[in-house]
Structure formats: structure tokens, C-alpha cells
Image (cartoon, rainbow, N blue to C red; front, side, top):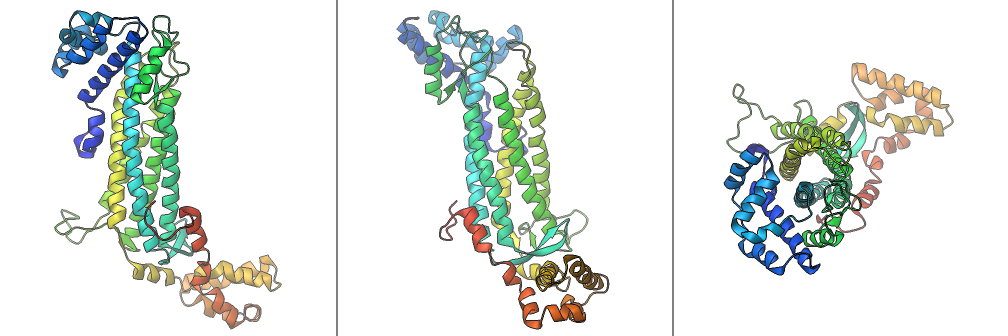
Length: 438
């Protein structure tokens, strides 16, 4: 994590203080369970809860000698607890603490990301309804295709992020597992009821089958979902970047008073936020391959996954948190230019209605091949020389006979292409009022 792209809430999830506090709670809850099972004296659990403490600097000092972070933590904890510390970590192995802690951190990170998605969904829905019937041209291959609305565009992104929210909920459940099963996962030195107790206290489920670690397919799925969400962020960011191009200027990022776009050119208003989002999305996705490669560990465990997760856990979640927050701000403040959208819509002289002319000719009895050739010939004349597509059509006797003026009026009425906008909104947002709540 770097400070520039890390928000305070997510930083707290990954702080050393939080990590060691979770370690402490794991050990203390495990002791409580052992007391209930008659495995250790109740005084031991009381001593840990009452006197248990740790110092981050002291742990680092001990680790410098032991080269083992969990042992360093337990040693520091024992310095505060006293003789009863001999019961701490009974029958457990380091991964019982490390993996269960990581599960807690990833679930907390997920909750932050879910809240981020809720705010983004609200912003997208609000702006989609605002521009439900704001006419604009749809593009394929970046070339004018047919009519759509800016609200329909945003509704599509809303639908994607709604799917992503569901994916993240599933990934959160997948990752929220606790493993306190001993050196090779057989519970040879610890009762499974200890694991169940700790899991309940921490809001986790018990891992059905751990080795020395929680299986890393769970983590791979989690980071893959983060990568998919990041791709959704980039898709919307690129759409805004394209719409802000000088040649289009249909929408642009909010440009605040005093903001500067270029050190050399005072006129510049660049899409710097959405360009930044494209870069951040790349960084989140970069965590996916290492997470997938972590699945295949040697036998019951090796530590090849450890260094990877120490980096991608904080970095991917913090970066995505920042990106979702930034994207929401962009959507909320996005400046939309309906007049420019209309100008661009009209730019090709009506060529975007070509399919509907084609369909009308085939319905009038002309073969599709002949109809396509005649419509394309008229379209290419406009494409190469400008002018009105409708006038070109009317100059062709066969087309004019098959499509009388009243029918052409209907064909060239953009509103007729938008007749199912309400249906799309109902599918995306459900049957409801135009309330902006997601």
C-alpha cells in the first residue's frame, strides 16, 4: 500500500496493530474454548484477557532474533501474561493464527468494498434516471451504430456492478473460514470444538478440510473477483475518457476552479481521474495470477504463498477501495453535454437509420441481398460526400416506391428506436419509481 492510493478505513484493516490484535483474539478465544473443554485452567484464560498486551516495536525486536513473527508475538505476549502464558497456543501451529487472521482481514476489507459498491450503484442509478432519455449515438468499433441514450449506457454499467456486488458477497463467504486444526490439519493436538468456538467468535465458518493451511483456491477466487470488479471500473473509465475526447465532448470529468490540466498548455482539461482509474485497475488485476499460482503448495504446506499474500492482500483491496471511491466521485460530478450528443447523433446525416431502411425494404418484398446493396450504395454516397441519407434514398426509385414518405418519417424518428428504454430500465432496476436508492 502507498499512502497516495490508500484510504484510512482500509489502511486500518491491514495495520500491524490490527493484525496483532486479531492474533491476540484468536489465542484468547481458543483458550476460552479449552477452558470449557477442561483442557486448561480458567485462570489461564483470565490472565490472558486481563493482562495480555503487546508492543509492535518489541515484537519486531524479538523477530529480528527468532526470524519468526508468530513466536515473536507469543514471546511478547508472555512477557505481559506471566506463567499462565504456557497454555497459550496449546496444540496450535502458526498457520492457525495467520490464516484465520487473514480471513478476518479479508472479510473486513470485503465489507468496505461492498459499501463502496453500494455508493457507486447509487450514483450510477441516479445519473441513469437523470439521462434516461438523453439521446446519443451508440458506437461499435468506435463508429456510429444506432441510437441509444446516455441513461441506457449508465444502466448497463449499473447492471455490471450489481453483478460484481453479488460476486463479492460470494467471495466474502468463500474466504470467511477459520482453521485451527494443528500442524497438518488432523486435530491431533487440539479439539475441533476449539476451532468451532473461535470461528463463531470471529464471525467465520470452520474450514471443512485444512492441511496446515486453508486451501488457497478460496483466496484465488477472492482476488479473481477483485480483478473482475477492477475491469468493470476500467470499462466505465474508458467510456468516459472516450466521451471526453475533443472530437466528441459529450461528457467530461468535473474540472474544479483553480485546477490545471497541463504545465505547458493552459487550455487543457484532461480526463486525468479516469486515466488514473485505468492504471489502478491494472494493478488490482496484477494480483490475480499470483493468487492463482498460490493454490498449488507442496504437500500440506509451504510458505511460497506467504510473501505473495502479504503484498497482494493489502495492495489489491486498498487500491480497489480507492478506485471505487474515485469512480463514484467521477460519476456523481460528471458533466454531461446533451447538445453535443445531439450534434454527434446528427453528424452522419441519418446513416444510423440504415438498418431500419433495410428491414423496411425486405418487408416490402425485396430480397435482403438487393436491399442491402441499395441501402449501402446510398449510405456510402453520404459517407464519402456528405449530405442527407434520406435524400439519397428518395432519389432511388425502387427505394422510394417501397418506402413512402410517411414510412420514412417513422424510420428516421429516433424516438421509435428508444421505445424499449423503459423495458431495459425495468430489467436493470426493477419495477419501481424513479427512486435513486439501489
